Image (tube, rainbow, N blue to C red; front, top):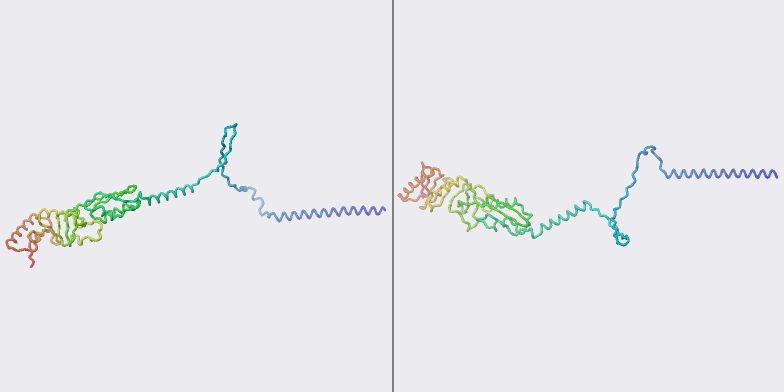
Length: 329
């Protein structure tokens, strides 16, 4: 019996020890499993001690726009009613610039298409020989907007088209006012050549006769060739250019004072100035130097011609010491 009790007690101790070992083994395996799970989820540390001074900023949260709060007092026992909040709207520069651009485009469209700014009439001052319709037809501004007027271009166009204009000024005013001021040249000589009639001013500038009703100066010069060579082109009227020298204009005016009132002045490129005598021949004096002596010499030749009852084609007193007359057969 004693041995049986000892063996039982030994078995109990052995069982307790076995159970203790099994519990110790279970705890060891559980701790290993936890360490393996933790090591697999956490990445390995590559650098130690290098991030101690770094401060990581927290992600910024978007600020919500505040709402305006309005409380309305009811006037009874301090009671008040709270109205719904109204959010504050912030207007940016992009919105403002877009609004200004839209308004500017609308204004430009209005200015360009409004009948208020369309030209319907021109005011032209200083015309004497020309008509307003002649100038308006060249510009072609009827119905155009006032903002399409190029002052410099129109001044140059008028100067090129009308050589009789010595000065042109174009002024533009709102809403649709165009004022043109011109200064016309004053013709003093009528130049006849090759069936054409040109008018010449005191500076020797030639310009065309516009119409049959156009008044021409009584001082006329018939010429076979002009001092400048070819006549200005009749179809394309260029900018006013020098047609005859100013000295020749003075000579023509001086010659007209010596010529008979019924005689027309003549010009020849070789023989110079003269006039067509009423008896049927041309007399040439060259230039106006020594005009008194040349006139006396011509009067003596004319008396001799009348005495001999001959009709020459021309008489030349260009050179005082070598006068002559020519009779064509």
